[in-house]
Length: 397
Image 1 (tube, one colour):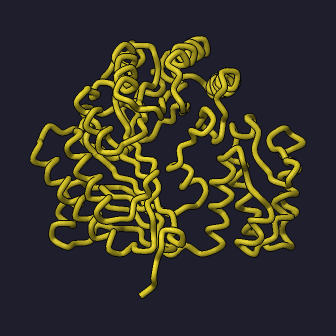
Image 2: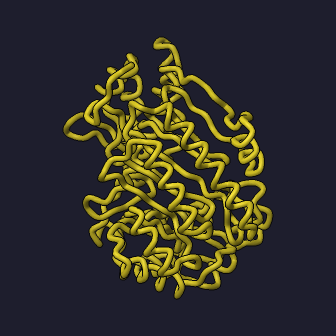
Image 3: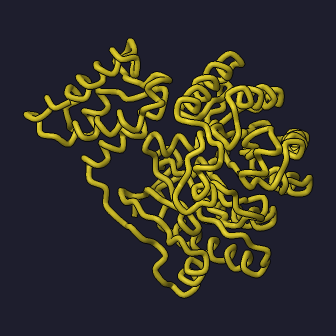
């Protein structure tokens, strides 16, 4: 049996999916259910704790340095259930003393008791879903709060001692103009959160807002681009460093958990539809709450899409995730890890540089510019195609 010390253990992130919501937002494609059944919530808690215990026994060589409770709405699930799950994680895994432990929160489900309990249990980071400061727009997209509630929720979070708070915002919302978006940023900046995430509205088939998209008075692509570039400029002027396409922070307050996804770290996900990348394999829990509960209880199959990830596929993922980051890609690291030439990719990136979409830094790294981020999906797709082509067929790009 291998002997592990904390110094030689591999860092691991844990994600816990809380699939319960008070109501479903009009744009939301994440797996969640509207639920008022406390017995169902209790059964879910038992199932996810059992799953965590089972996984913990398989990870003696890991140390958990980030934990993230997402959803759904973790705060709707409640402090007692979240505390019980966190306690199970601590008992089942080696958790670092300085672990970043985050929970997502909706303003309408914040209470002093909940915050006091979660703070005492060791949660040290909050991600608050504000989205915008316009009550009419919030109502249109199905958010169960208004802006005044959001401000009071933020103030409560601060008063209960949380010193690492992130705020989620959205642009391109129904009826939202560029001026309205910049006013939202101005108002939220008065709260002085440590971290701000700005997401452009993306409509997914099957969501209510997608069905009425032609009549929803949505921003066109050019306006969304203007909103994005305005956010980068405004937040920079207020001391927020952009470190990822959609994420900005004060110094020392990056989301350590999300960086695991973008930097290729290992993580385990618990709960229906939660994804994992662990031990060289990727897998996802089934997208079915009752099926997940029954599978854990009865020893059934709850994981799907289990696959070993080939080195070339990892190389493509490296390009996809690292080019989301302002730090970008390192050609030497790419060649060393994947034994693939970077030169064909650099030829393409040089053309991107000429068009103002990419930059090569003094130490040889490549990263996208703000305008490059706007078309990052296209750039990354081209790079992955170049990577997969034979060396004799690179001239097509």
